[in-house]
Each structure stands twice: as C-alpha cells, then as structure tokens.
Image 1 (cartoon, rainbow, N blue to C red):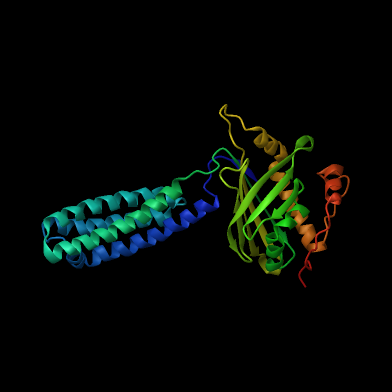
Image 2: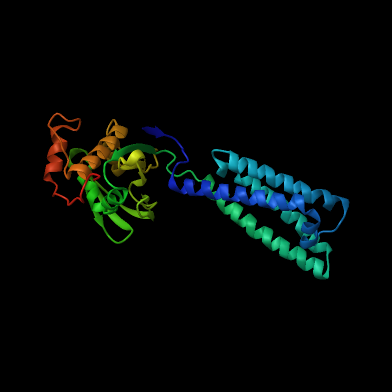
Length: 320
C-alpha cells in the first residue's frame, strides 16, 4: 500500500498521539476533582468565595471533561491539544488576578497553584507543538506486512543487524554500521549511480520495534519503522513496515539531482517493491537464501545483483 500526503502515522506523531491521550486522562482526573470538591480546590488555590469563584471552579471541571471527550474519543487527539493550552492560559489569567489581590498565606497558595498550572500548560504546549508537526509532507509513505515462519526474537535480531538488510532489499547495495545507533546506507540508482545517506535508530524495543530516520540535512530525508508481533495460532511473526521518503526540494520546486535519483530508484511501483522485499525476507528467514528465477518480477537483473552479494549467515529459520 502506498499513499501520499501529510499523514500522521510517523513515529513522532504516534508518540504525540499517545501523549495527547495521556493528557486526556489527566483532564478526567482534574475534572473529577473540580466538580466533586470545588470548595477544597478554591481553598488550595487561594481563590475567594465570591459567587464568580463558586461558579468558575465547577465550570473548569466541565471544561476538563470536554477535553477528556475529545482527547480520548478522537482518532487524532493531538489536534485538540491546543484547547488545553487555551484553557491553561485562562486559568493562569485568573490565578494572576488572585495573586495580585491576595496577601500572606492566600497569596502564597495562589502563587503555588499558578506555578503548577504553568508547568501543566508547558507540557500541553510541548505536546501541541509536537503534534502539529508535518514531517515529510511532500513525501511518499509506503506500508507493507508479511508473516514469517520464524520466532519473533529471531526476525527482530536479523533485522537489527542492519547489514543484513542488503540480503533482501533489492535496491540496497549495503548498510555499514557506524555505532549502536548510526549507520551509512548505499542504494543503487539508475545508470549505475548510487545514492548514499546516514540514518540513526531513534527507537529500539527488542523483539518489538525498530525505528530509524535520516538527519534533517541528509541529501535524502527518509525514515522507517518495523514492528514485530506474534502471528495468530503460532504461525510465526507478523512483520509490519512503514517507510517514509522525502527527496529534498530545490529553489525551483523540483527535487535535487540526488533526490531525483532516489525517486527514480523507487520505481513505478514502490509499494510492490516493498512487498517484494518482505517476501525475500521471508525466504531468507525460512530457507536461508533468496529463491529467485529469471522470470520473477524483478527479472534477471535483480537476480544478478543478489548473486553478486556475499552470503549472509541466517539463524535457524522455521518454527519447530
């Protein structure tokens, strides 16, 4: 499957989405307190007992319940985080008035409450800004999945050794591991050209997930995430891959020479290419080699490239 546009499925947005839902639960807790114990809230915040204050505290509780509804009920809760930022700004304005009008202990209470609301609002602002980002808005997002008849830990370990990727990714010439998180990638482009870039692992959960991305100043902006889960009925491992590519855009609005080469490298059917790569991964994991024929979709040229690559050791494939 391949789709263009400004999707929110990048790993950073996945994290922002989880943070937004966490703040939704925080709103629920705050709303319960504001409505169930408004007198205690006013006393701790150093707010007076005027009719306005008596109405305002429960109203804040209702507002927090609204935050909970949109943050926990929306498919894209990060888009609603600015409502929490706005609510925090209103609360800070009210507490600022309380600080200016109070003296002694009541003023210290109001200042403490204002400091707490400031901290929470800062978290809201951070999450809202992070959720509003649109990385790779002009790029290409590719997704594919396959079931591999090997244990999840084995498939993860094979992929985590990044040099193994060249065994089954047909256009990838090599991956050189620099250190625990950084690596250098070389891909084969058209007319014998090569495209090179660095990448860094940004999240690594053994047996579950590997995520990587290139630096912002790389000639090609690319990122990816691969997830490993147990297949139903003990059939092996489900491997789900998401790749995002964004060739750089020059002043004239066209991709630069390196970016253009990278775009051509993806071919006319990039989604099918990713699925073919995963099928080769399945063959490598289950049989120890890529089984190819001259009549395969990639043809004799692809077979020749694979034959030229040194054999890679593969752990025992298959499930006993």
